[in-house]
Length: 419
Figure 1 (cartoon, one colour):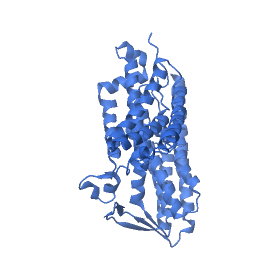
Figure 2 (cartoon, one colour; figure 1 turned 90 degrees about the vertical axis):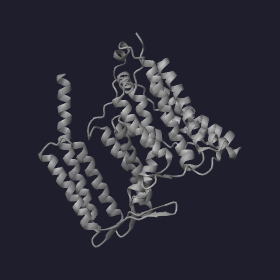
Figure 3 (cartoon, helix red, strand yellow; figure 1 turned 180 degrees about the vertical axis):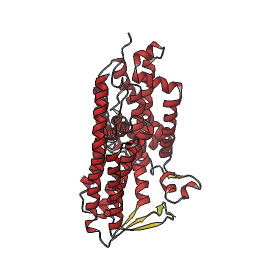
């Protein structure tokens, strides 16, 4: 007990000095950005144009040098404040100042140029969707104590089968159901191996990924390339504007003119939060993930809870795959999951196994994925590969405990054997 207290004190002390130092260094870097911006302006367009419809919004024209200096001063003052006193909302302050730093970089990148900020944010939400679904998939599995790195494979198989189901039926809804079913099939394999036979869950998940990669690559070449009509589900799922709300400037295009799968993700986030924290079933899932032996003693069927949770995880991962194929690309391509399952797991850890935090992590990945493309078009002089490193650096900082330790469920990854 004393040793744990000592460790906690050391972590707190380290954070008390590291946090302000980080912000001061960030402020110095922001000030450095202003060196070649004298007399230039940065233009941010908030008008949205989608499907031939224009939603008006203000255009912000900012003096680049002055704006960057103001933002740098804000970050520096926050660093000094953290140095002289301790704040309970340290995580929130650091997150906000990182956001201010990103804004300063965007002002620098758009000096003497123009950037459609609303379009960039819309793209961020779109690109964050498969990652957010993968993160939610991981939450269901890992909250019950089963590590599921096989999400990547479940996404890939879901993307494959959803295309075939949609092509044969002519219905995108049937395609999504097909993708969810495929995800559940792969999840059941992972569940049987890791729960019944108590195989190492990392090994089992890796096996699911390898099987999915090989199987979909073979079937793509053997079936889809020869029968192209099975890889032609039609146009990607169109955005569904919510009446009145979608015409709200800036907010409307971002949240209320999106794909039905994105709306489903929003509902799932709310539903999962309520389910895990305010229902008896959610309490049982968390109990199984924290202390399965105690849960078993109280009459909870540990195996059934874990099986159901992993199957739900697979269904959500399959939905992510369906979104990537019939929801966005309009076809299946080999390896199109492109690491989204792993990014989802990183977002899940970022959010400390909570739906809201996990989606925030997914949005960060989606934002930086979008800004990598936009800033490449602006030709800011920074290699796009370096711009693409930003979300991974942020994740490593968080996972290293810079803004607080993430705490995984105590029994996560530990097979349970009934005594």
